[in-house]
Length: 229
Image 1: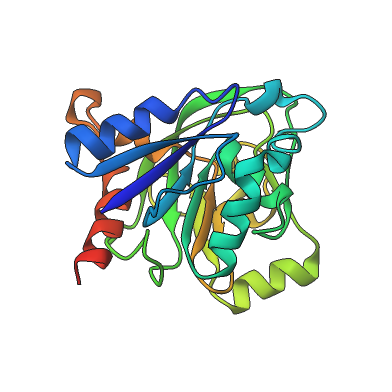
Image 2: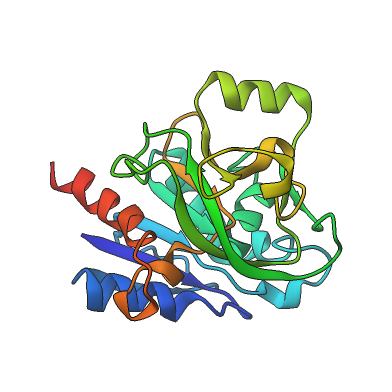
């Protein structure tokens, strides 16, 4: 399988993802520079976390106009798989590939810690292998508060587009387990066609036994399993 990892000025999680895909999962990875317009026939594109363009104006707002995004939007609209993690999620909402927006954390502070997530939909290529009630994945963001109006939230629920919700260690979704004030405790969503995914937590930072946590590698294994069928 051939993955493309997009690198913007200010990306800082690209190498983590490349390490997991290449070294741990033995997959082919190509680095896609933000000025590229050739996607090199990749099967799956990942927009990593970081601070693209220094998060000036608004997180993801400038990256959305990078030359490569025009091609990624075409790729996604034709059914290609695209996943955005943290800043990548922000870029996907700014590009209108995913509904809603990511706003400042309700605390107005940068948050970096492990959180518990409850997998909600198992009907996507990135979540099918999750069978545990909760998983532990780190977050690291200042603008991770998912916001959408009631019409969009209702549609996300109706169409099973919510991938993960913030929860406690037992899988109880409540206000106290919501680190940033996200609507409905939402930590990740997909589009209606189930080929574009966005999540604020960093699965690539929980995908190596050296870190004593491999809950995140299941997400990547789920992708590989689907492509091997």
